[in-house]
Length: 565
Image (tube, rainbow, N blue to C red; front, side):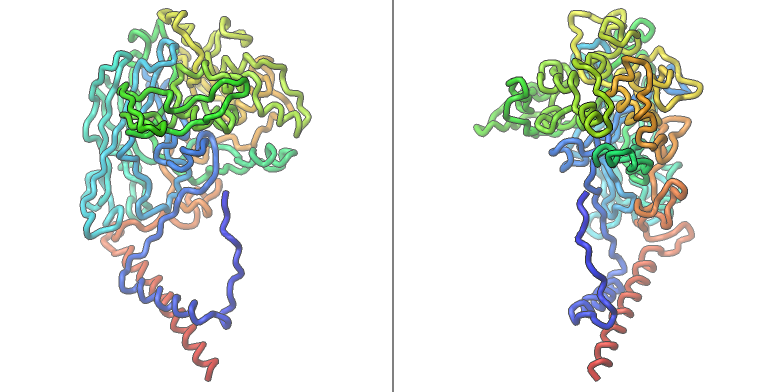
């Protein structure tokens, strides 16, 4: 993270003339306009797949952060898929807050037969609506009690389509409302009601939601400081506490995503999310891989419409192109080397097994070597075919050294074994029922309904993957030296009991929020102009601030004149 230079606060009696004049003018300007709202950009950091590659870090609206897939605990005949975008949303980030991109496509893809290609693709495409762009800069101009209120100056709707393996597309919903960003308690006193209004039914009996949520991912990011400070002293702080993300969720009957529509014969699916942009080519590594294999490049991946046109400089202006992808958590961060991160984001899973440098890092990962160097815990012997199972094939007795049948599409009765390829996907066996008492360590905690069999919102994937990288999936035993993990064991806000399950978005400034006081000291920014009883919150508040600034400036100038006298 970049920090601003530290400056020493000036003493009152040594204020420069320029500072005094600026202070007075600032107060006067605030009084005149009665509207001065500043925006806060997301901070620079990295987590699960938050800003995991150089190019996505500069395009947060296209940046997939996490994917979750689980049998719905309250509706076990359905499966819920959740994907998040836009990392590190500071709740007070007005006046524009955090809309979905209207020039991108957001996808959740399902591979039911194990060929690395989607058999079902759900696509959300968003449209912006501004009620008054000429005379207003506010996100909302008053209290918002409905997603259709006229006080919601900026709103978004979306179209949701489903595309099958043959390219046939069906429109499921049109002009569906997305829940707005949570501006704060004054502007949106009942955000839970707004969320409920944004849950939309689907033709097959399912439902979908798009809107803001508290980030469900949790970890202590000081893992990057020599693995928690070199002696596990830097643990226990949830770096993502208080931040929000943009969530897209869908809940559908299991038959809607199972191979041949039969989830009894074919219960295993692979899930990942992607972002597409039109006419965009993601630059990939141009050099050679560790074994001399050419690194994958985005221009080697055909666009969705199959059309390819080159401008003579190696750039392609085509149809929609994949610019970001995410299946299993932390793969692009801690498995894929820096050289290939952008290219990995542009690849489709069916090509993963052809990329030697990336497969090599699954079989011989970097993290265990670091742990051995820093903590003296011996790295498991290579090649790590157990990790190939976890990340690329799914777990089955015929897949590798992990002697269990769990979540490989090879377990589906109708899978064509000859067409199966190793591919990086989050795999879920929908036949495993929800756990009565979920264990945060998932399968490692003898809870077969948890990661890496799908992923629930409160699965501790950091601790699970750390143990898996150290060989726990092979031995079935937790590595004692790393048993405590990062000491962050639960999400900042607990998931809900019903769809969309994700926790409501935070409203407190991140630097005021902690686990004991999740609301922080101050509610979110005043994006509206009135409270529930009609009191003009924003003009009065800003005018009051302007008055204070003006008075302070006037006093400073008066003091300067007195000193001269």
